[in-house]
Image (cartoon, rainbow, N blue to C red; front, side, top):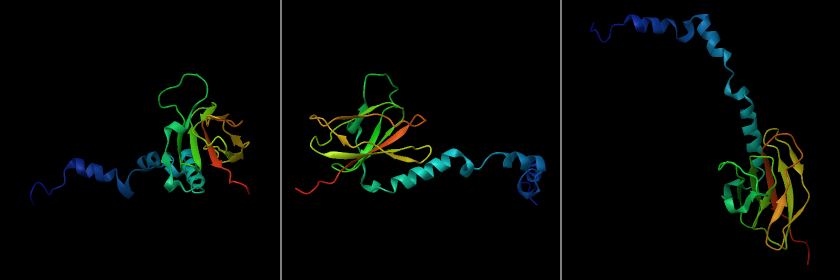
Length: 162
């Protein structure tokens, strides 16, 4: 038998500490860590997926110009509202901080429904209808809910009979 095929003492030791015949201390250490599906983030991802599936998210486009922080408080470069949606249609904005945002480039003559989504709990809350000012802007306060981040859905209300 060639030396490359023979088992070395270190390989034999490795075989004793891996697999189904591993010492119980090694098995306990591995099973002490929670599985990913038991961690809070996995449930939040599932709730976020279910929320997005209510909308034609495949048609969404990113639009950084559709939302910004209201006011002049400082923030880190990554702590900005992120918006995606369909031009002339539904918009979804993720706000990483519990601060008011300015929704921009709305139709000044149109009405909009508002829905808040709590990304941690997966709950929704209907907001007051929204109307933009003459420049197409509207200020939206965060919902009165615990937590830091929040999601805003702004959806054009259908035009009534004329």
